Length: 338
View: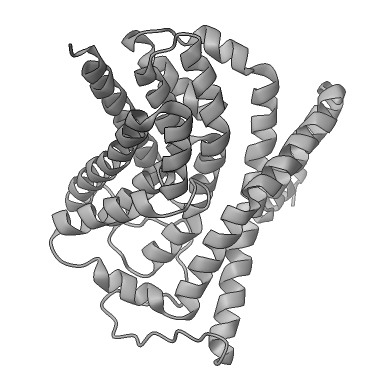
């Protein structure tokens, strides 16, 4: 075997996320030695900050699988597509999951046989709003802005679920997960839920295996995402963001694009956006930044990339950007009314 073939085999067998993390760290240490400590500190702090949300989502997904509640949830998402998509959009806007924390829940739903359209609706609406986020948004940006963002979250779910339904019906989307999860029941299966998972050795094993699998997946991909984000935070600070974003609707497309790399998390973004609005930025531009970043921030997109196949990942990005643009321009038109 030649050296090139050996490298190809090694690359195929290696954990891509871990290998990329190592290469980035080596590159920073070599090219930007002064940045290494800041990047490590940023990554560690970000992981600690998001750890509670990741832990909650991983445990919820693991419990749903171990107790077989995911099969009951899957059967709940049956019936008319419009009903499923509407229900998923509303549940998403009420759920407490962040854009990264929703990933294992999505994996569980897809593995349990829940159709892709309502999953996509839940996927899009969930990171944008939850009860805590509503009150924090109202406190920082006003009640009107919080209500508008809630309506946008539901609207994003309805739009994304409907478009996904059309794509699935035309055969454009079929398999979703990169690696199909084993042992996941079909939504048509008559599975009896076992709520006390500690009684059964099999349920305990499933709980532990699912938690470890999802936790390890998120840990390594989030580490990679936060490493990349540390470089962007260092070289794309908030002052530069404020300078790039304008004060009228013409800045909405740019705000959508900037929101993807510059967005940290929903709670950290609120004071930043409030400061930008105080500098004269339009609330519609702020909405574009919050919505696009909330769904497609680098940590969220990295976790999604690790979960689903490239075609579905491209649809996810397209729907997030389309929904952000439509929501922001609609809000701009509302603000312009006398």
